[in-house]
Length: 237
Image (cartoon, rainbow, N blue to C red; front, side, top):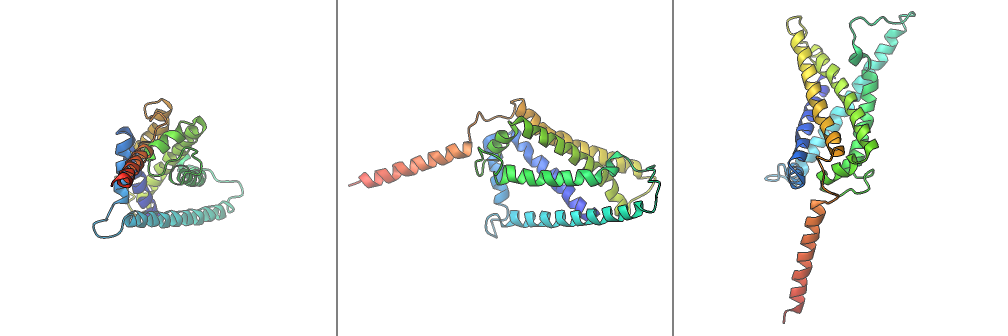
């Protein structure tokens, strides 16, 4: 579970850092997305590297869920040995709520993909325009609130996951435990602040495109130029 957790922590960090391109503007965000699709095109077809990364993440996510389910069953089996119930001494709030924050984050991932990748929940979805899609989605207050709640759950999950990951890997010593805790706190805080900034600043109007899609407008310009070129050819003697 520690290894899959490490892979997912890396993805969450890189994903959040990539989303900071929203502060660069609509076209820069589009170019960043296109750069991801163009990875490895010097030697292999377009999007193959991106899809390989996606399949790797899906595998890590599935293995992580399987490990979490197995640990939950073991924990419940152990609970039956204590008729009077457990008295949690060392466990903190984050660790005791892992079984709840995990499924909540899982539901959020599915919604996030359906919302911003597939466009099922976004009535003004434009393929290939992540900036516009983020603004169109998070301008809806209930959606923004859902993103905030889900990312608080994600940060809580990350805090305990980052803390316990080192213990699972055998790095558990009174000498290093304070550093482990500070790392977990800092990592979770960075992810939380970064991810919460997007729905909050969209609602505040800092991230905004005025309902325009630069990708759609660019495509319309290309279509218009192509139409003019065809018209010129058709009228040529």
